[in-house]
Amino acid sequence: MPVYEYNSLPVHYKRTGTGKPLLVLHGWGSSSDVMMPLARQLAPTHTCYLPDLPGFGATPPPDSPWRIDDYADLIHDFIRDLELKEPDILAHSFGGRIILKLSARDKAGSLLGKILITGGAGMKPRRKASFYLRKYLARILKAPFMLLPSTLREPSLRWLRNTSLWKKLGSGEYQQLQGVMRETFVHTVTEFLEPCLPEIHHEVLLLWGLQDDATPLYQARRMEEGIHSAALITIDEAGHYAFLDQPRKFTLIAEAFYTSSG
Image (cartoon, rainbow, N blue to C red; front, side):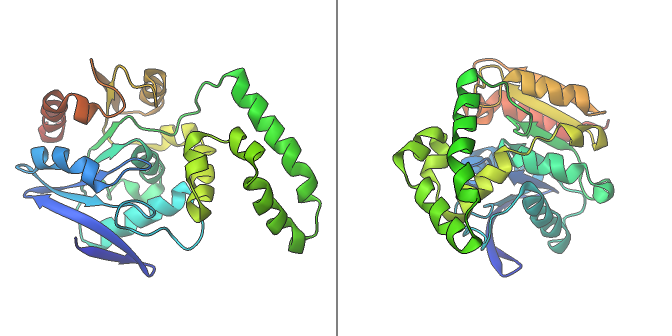
């Protein structure tokens, strides 16, 4: 895999195909390997670039916890330094968060081409009462530790995070993470991107699996309503990984979108 050096961080990426550049961004806990079958289908018309985002695949985690803006900064510089002229974008799940943030920036107009988001995250989810119960219980448990002097606070919080009670309060993904990626996960899932939507002026296709239970269809509809030039297409018998569940349908729709004139 070629390597792009970003602030001393080796970002590994794959490349395949010929034609207009297409940047393919994977989801949380995934890697470029998952997106490669789709990239190969689009390779006749696009040169596909598939980075392993920091903390996933072959790319190591950053030295300190990142926020969505940090990943957006990386993608901005990746496009600039590799001289990808207005690449089209295909972003899945967590990759969708990054592109929502990046495409809402003032200077994004001349940076990106057409944007396809599938199973994109970033909208505030509907929560059950049990979620808020765990959330407020965690705050109550954490509060006394925040009163400690700074020299004692962090060691005490690390002890708290390793207790069985605290782990029960966290999500399954949170419990599986360690170090900077655990904090990165918290920064990511607690930032909701509805304010970005009116600032996005690119042509955006939202391509969603009807049975997506990770980023349900109501979240896609919220994106469609908030983005000026967005259209939503759904694929039946497909979930969060619609491009794997219905690869032929997904590829045909994506190709039609990228090659259309308007």
